[in-house]
Image 1 (cartoon, rainbow, N blue to C red):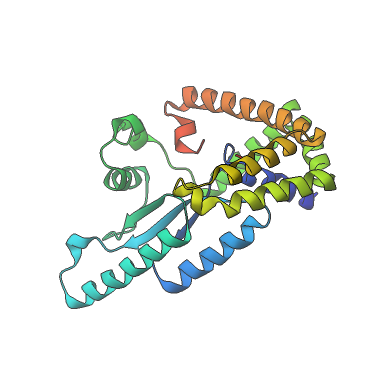
Image 2: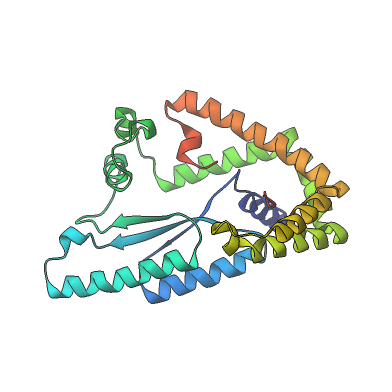
Length: 254
């Protein structure tokens, strides 16, 4: 049972439409290196990070002594390394004078990090009035919610084709060839320097991948599951009065 649930979690973590995997780290040598190694390991199971959060960054305006200047200079070095190692958005969280606790403090920090943005409801009084429940209550509610979703026809219909796809050696080989080609072109793609020959090969591999019967069945079942999650998100948004999908986040094969 535990192995089956772990498989479900991994499948969801692989899909950027269902989840976003974020690394949170201090801009220091060991945390950056450990996070990078973890990212490399996660790629072997098809999980790509979608965000990096650099925490406790000393704001430039707070550099007032030689000691703080030295720490800021060190952080700048590792912030640059983070941007080099991770080709995803990087959010810097400034070092705060006190502990961040409660919805008001989080809203204030969000406004400071992202700027005043009414579209994101950063200053919405609804956020400030939300009662923060204890972790045990939140965990129990989240667990019940996940179990309810797991009992839906859409989720159960997704499990079988997902399992069949994992067992399909030919489809897995085609998927690996596509991902290898995709990874090899990642740097060139960022620079918009992919040759027409390499792009044609990538397109050929993708077409071959999505012609595999088990991939077709998995894609169809996944689309129905995503549609269900989007509908649930809309209901939750109406119920709590804020954009639930924006507070969370938007498969494998681009």
